[in-house]
Length: 200
Length: 293
Image (cartoon, rainbow over all chains, first blue to last red; front, side):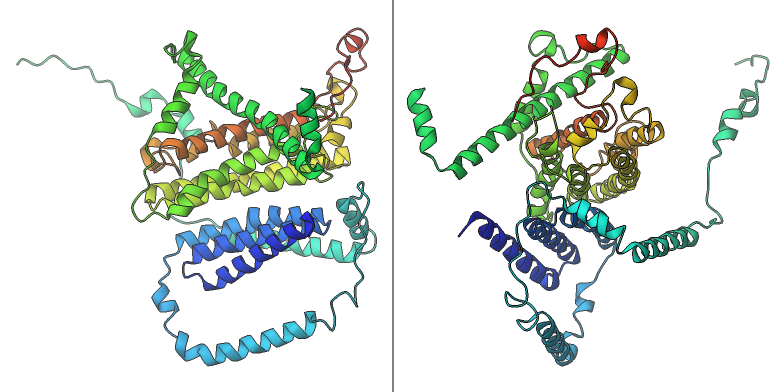
C-alpha cells in the first residue's frame, strides 16, 4: 500500500466517522464541530485528487465562515434535548421509510451502474506545474461566463437584500454623539459659584 | 562523520525526506517562538518606558531572561479545568489556535528558493488557515462553561470573522496585480525598487490590510476582546498554566505572521528597496546565490 492510499483511507475513515457523529451526537455544538471535522477531512481528500483550489476554498468558505456562524448561533441557543427527542418513537416508522427511500435513490445514482472504473478511467496524474486554480479560472471565464456572471449578480442582490433587511433604525436605541461630546464646553457642565465662607 | 553519512544513506528515501522536512519545520518554528518571547519582553519594556517605569529588569542582565523565566513559570503552574467544562475541547482549543498560526509559515518565502512548500495556491492556503484559527477562540469560550468566557469569545470571534472579509478583499487586489497566488511569484511581481512595491500602486488596499490586520490580532485600538471591567480577560479567563501560555503564543505568532505577510504582499518581500537605483542599487544587490531549502 502506498503512502497516498494510506492517507486516502485514513481521511475517508475520518469523513465517515465524523459524518456519523454529526447525526448521532445529542449536543448540537458537538454535531457542528464534527461537521467541521468532516469538511476538513473532505478537503484533504480533494487535495489528494489534485483539486487544491476547491479543497482550500472548502476550508476557507465552509469551515472559516459558514460554520463559524452556525457555531455562533448554536452556542447562543438554549436547546432542550428532551423536547427534541419526545416524538422519536412515534415518528420512527416514517423515518425508517424515508431513510430507505433516500438510501435507495443514492445507491441508484452513485452505485456501480454509473460510477466505478468501468465508467471512468483512472485519472492521469498532472505535471508538477499544473495549476488547478488557473484551469478553473479559464473555464469559468470562457465556457461558463454567463452562468458565472448571473450567479454573481444574484449573490449581489442577496447581499443588498440582507443589508436592506437588517439596516433599520431602531427606536429607543441610545447613541452617544461624538461631535456633541467634543464640542462641549466646561461652562455646559459645571457652574462656578462664589459664596462666602460659612461660620462653623 | 563518514559513518554518520553512510548510516543516513542507509535509510529509505521516504524516511530521509520526513526527517529532513521535520528539521526544516524546526528551523522555521524555533525562531518564531524566540521572536514571540522577545516581543513580549519588548512590549513590556516599551510600555513601561511610556509609563515612566523600568519594566522587567531583574532576571538576567537588563531583564533579558524574563521571557524564559515566564515560560518556565507557566510550564510548572497547575492547569485548572473548571467543573462541568468539556475537558477534551477545553484542552484542544489552545492547540487549534496555535496550530494554524504556525502552519501558515509553511508557504512563507524567506528567499527566492528558501520556502518549505512552494505551492501554487499559497495565498489561499494562508487565508484558509488563518480563518480556521478562530475556532480555538470560540471553542475555548464555549468549553470553559463560564458566561464571561463565552461572552468574551463572542466578542473576539465576531471581530476576527468581520475583519477577515476586509483582509481577504485587500488580498484579492494583490493577487490581481501579481497575477498569481504563489507568494514567491507575488514578490517577483513587485521587482523594481521601493516605488514598484505594491504598497504604492495599491495604497488604499495597503491601508485596509494594515487596519484589518491590527483588528484581526485584537491589538489596540481594536482590543475590545479584552475588557477588564465587563468580561475580565476575554475568552481565556478560565485558562491557566501552559494552556494559557499556548493562547499567548498563538496571539503573538499571529501578529508576527500578519506583519510578515504585509511584507510579502505589499513591501516587496526579500527584494532590495533600491533595485535599479544609480548608486545604492548595486550596493544593496544580492551578492550571494539564493539558498535552496
